[in-house]
Length: 338
Ligand code: CP
Image (cartoon, rainbow, N blue to C red; front, side, top):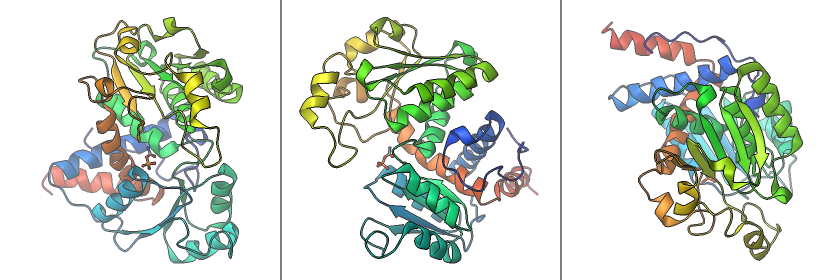
């Protein structure tokens, strides 16, 4: 992929709030940038494209992967990230999200935030003069989606076209499920949400998936029939509860999902594909939505997926920082020894 030329030299949107805002070519620009930069850094290359640039990271909830991957990405690219953890800034009791966005937009070059409600990330984007990246809302998890797609490309079933690749999300229709539906269908694959009817992916997201299918091929559906697992190339799951305070109690979730939707050896066997990979956005509630045997098993790519959060964030900050093409050209020159 030496000498990759972006289809969109500058982003069509200032902000990265939802993968659904971008077409396939633009998402591939971000993914390819991320993968080329990963290879360059892994081979010992150094980049300084974000020199003197600051990323403010506002968290309304806890995070391990999102927080660390953005901070490391900025450091590796010569910039800096500020961890504004819950309760660390005036946001909330003493200052509105609008004023916070205006102030941080005057001091920092980019904002990233994990918010309780999607409306909050939209407000940050509206009132900030600089790009805003959604580090997860109650609606979508777009940075996870970029890392997930990179992981799927890394573990692509040999010889298959996108229209022959099947991705099954098992369990609760979380924001990770929504984004996976959007991204896989945008890449022309077959997406299935396998879960109980009371927790099925919304018609809105099925329609977004169908719209992608009509443009790019593949398919998009929900099912509670275990037969839908047959032929899966990737099984993906997320936690059943614990994402938010004051939500439905654990016992209620367990009764609805366990044992039918637990990803265990039996469920993986039901794919009838010994090469089927297992994915999880993490953190996992071990031996609830997934057994140790699957998460730690030979077909699990969940920890590659975690590492690819870092891969994705480097691509995202370069792309929305409008220095992606510059960076790709620099990498090409370095490889050519210029
Ligand atoms: N998958 C994910 O977003 O992990 P964190 O909550 O640790 O950021």
